[in-house]
Length: 95
Image 1 (cartoon, one colour):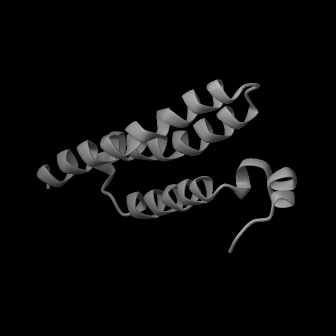
Image 2 (cartoon, one colour):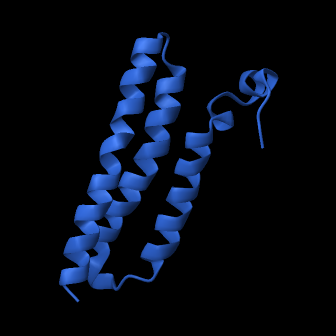
């Protein structure tokens, strides 16, 4: 579904495709981690926090006044998939 320029003004960052993808990722991570054992509570917390922060960084960047600040906030989520990967590898080795 393509968004018109009007959509960007009325929906703001919610109209951005990558924000919607981040929202889906967050839901998926929350669903997957529900099935983790209680002994993995720290890793679950880390993964949920990383998923949540992707959306938060996009939202925070949108609220900034300049494009340079927005660009800086959009760089932060790039590191999050590495966090997921590292946490997932550690969790899978502790089974």
